[in-house]
Amino acid sequence: MIEKRTVISIDVESWGLYGRPFWIAYAVMIDNCFRKTGYFLCDPQKALNDDVMESDKIWVQRHVLPYANNCRRTHKSPEDILDALGTLLKQYPDSIIIGKRVFPIETNVLYECLRRIRIKASATILDTQSQIEIAGISEKKFPRLFYELPVHNPLRDALYAARLFKEAQSTSP
Image (tube, rainbow, N blue to C red; front, top):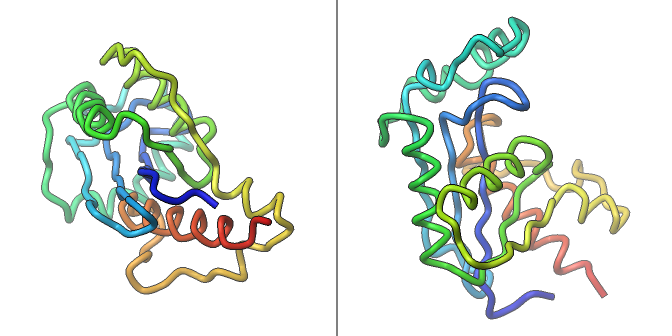
């Protein structure tokens, strides 16, 4: 069990699996308690480019933009939100970074973020979905709580990933 360690749960929304990010949310836990939550959001259209498949555009428009459109924009561009994430990670240099199904979206964003800030440290990145699957536990055992809804709101998804992480830690030998 990981105790007395900072864990940062992140979730990213982008245009498709390999598109540019427009919304990054986080939940910082210290000693298994939430200490800070927030998000970085730019205009989703600024992250859209010609490489995005039409099916990805439709999916994002249906599942993510209804929530993004109700939130305050905190940054001007995808590069700005990457830099903001970098600033957050610098505040917690030895943290464990977690997420639910982190490949490829979160891992690509973390790579780009760490490349931009040139942090001189390696990052521990854990996938909470893999953790519970390895433990032989179904995600259905942990339905989302009211503050973890709606799905595809990255702050709510980051909070859910954090809870799955805590659950997986409590079932570890």
